[in-house]
Amino acid sequence: MYAITIPEPGGPEVLTWAEVPDPVPAAGEVLVEVAASAVNRADLLQRQGFYDPPPGASPYLGLECAGRIVALGPGVAGWAVGDEVCALLSGGGYAQRVAVPVGQLLPIPKGLTPEEAAALPEVVATVWSNVFQVAHLRPGETVLIHGGASGIGTMAIQLAKAVGAKVLVTAGSPEKLSRCAELGADVGIDYRKQDFVEAVKEATGGAGVDVILDIMGAKYLQRNVDALAVNGRLSIIGLQGGVKGELDLGTLLAKRAAVVATNLRGRPLAEKAAIVAAVREHVWPLIEAGVVKPVVDRVLPMTEAADAHRALEAGEQVGKVILRA
Image 1 (cartoon, rainbow, N blue to C red):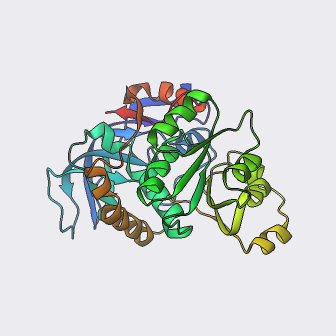
Image 2 (image 1 turned 90 degrees about the vertical axis):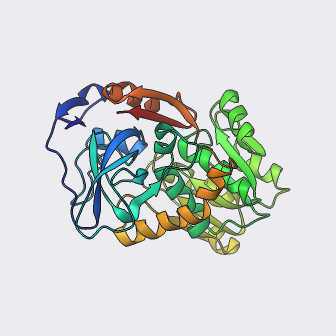
């Protein structure tokens, strides 16, 4: 088969479409013929040599895909050759075929194309696990979503609104904030022109927000805690603003607040399977009912993965950039 390879770490230009060995599904895995994959920021880090795949994972890029099952490994039940699926991956989506643990498979939601379905697994699993399982966002609460126009952000807006929360978002342009509003965001904050802490206090009558979904890490750490309400929960899923920051624990203590940082890729198979099962139970009905939808910015041929990476690095997109196999 062919896959996007990284002969040496570097810029987007190092990505190379090359012939590689076919994967073989192990016990409890299926082989998926990839129709589409999606680009995530973790892919950019891996390309640069900063984010190695977990032990035993595919060496190729790609944390989600959609396609068709073409072979079953030993002991697989409940799935059949020919099933149309999308999948959460530890790697390998930028390829013609990928082996997937059965616990990370999802049926393609009714009415969606493979390109749309490929935009779902990583963002839905990330948002559901962090906003709802970790931070326990509840109806009537208020959530601040940093990077509202990103793939994660566009999904988080929709799921938060679907459960009856008030949604505040940050984004870097009026155009992106407008798109967030179309998806249901109640308050938009231009982080280039506004102090998001002050904007949060103004929007909440000084109370702060109950939940924050953060992609920045160190750069926003103290300000995020300042923006939390009493009993607030900060969930950190990205480190675009650095890995080391200072925090006034007195503020955290006074607010009885919690700070949690998680990732998805390195979790044990059983944890991923539990998250995927919860997504299928709680989110898939919303997608099939049209309440929540994938947001696809553009679709490019997989052989043009370098251009897809450039678009994501430039912050051009709203939602997901998809690679068609």
